[in-house]
Length: 322
Image 1 (cartoon, rainbow, N blue to C red):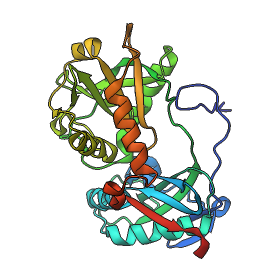
Image 2: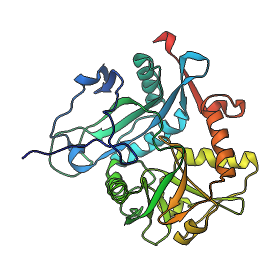
Image 3: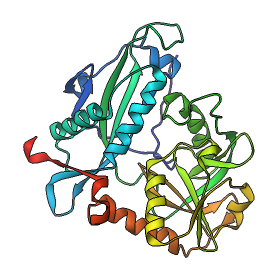
Image 4: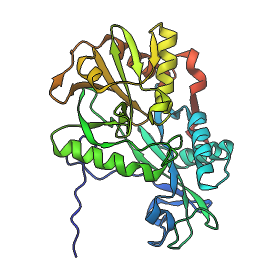
């Protein structure tokens, strides 16, 4: 039986194949990406028993021999915590040192997205987490804008975000992304760029792979952590920036109806940073987005290492020693 595969971009349009970094990490060693293979019987492939991370890196402005990794410490800490759900112990420090070495070996000269993944690597058919080996793999891909900065159109998904009682949503588990994939494809198939998922209680949770913020009367609002969201690192960064900029922010349950009367809405995540929403279903949002713009400008300054106050958020990797 032949299976036809169509590659698509994040917005649902046909896209060119991804450009992978030349070196990967698998089974405790670095090796060429095209030599990094796992068995078709790998446990995680069948049961979604893996946890993952995503880290963005950019060439430093005016310093081509440096790559800036944004909030690497926080990403490594979250992945270390996520690994505990698999019964795997790996320190944030070990992850950080391996990722830095990975970047040095690959010598990227363009914006990149790093994907570390801890997975059950044994070969077998029993869904379990005990008596199963775990391993770390890493690869990287060139990445520009994940979503258009001009704005995205969102639909309310017919799929609901999982509950923490059924999956450990504090961790970034691969199994949780089946709902994200269903919601994303549903949105693209119906003419939208992105999906907004409600939780089982009918409150706004998050987008397919991003957190969500809205602005009403100058106040920044985002679903609270008890709304089955992923505790996003970019989300945390934005809340910090808002506080420092004097923008009132509140974390609380959000009703669907609030999306339709919001002054501004934006999505945020490691891949996309900040993407403004221009339409939800048939409701268009105002073109003027002062709060979103201020936050994006400040976040970008932090990412590029231009804001001393947030220098601790940036890990500078010197490629000249690669």
